[in-house]
Image: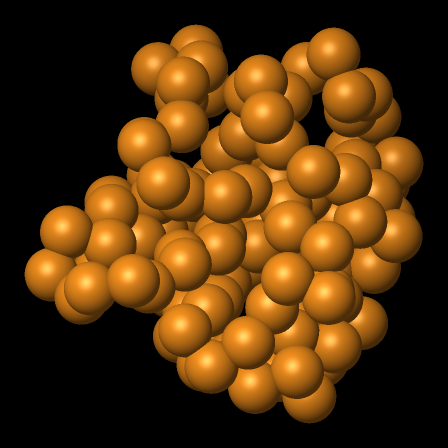
Length: 111
């Protein structure tokens, strides 16, 4: 999701601590999308949680949920774009991207 598409209807769900946080964040984002009209859930993954993106059971994103992966974390963990679920956006820095989203009016939840 480009930052020009971010706004007050965007909810950023941030996963950074553990690989298992990715699945929790995707589930939370899907629940938010199901419960709140016209919301745009966006899961941002960085830090140690980046390893959770190679979970074979997360090969498909929930409908209406966007996913962004931190390139810095990917490099640190030896991951490439081909290792990520289809549709994953790669951003240079997860924390910078989250800051840009918040400045554009997005809401933030950390898992």
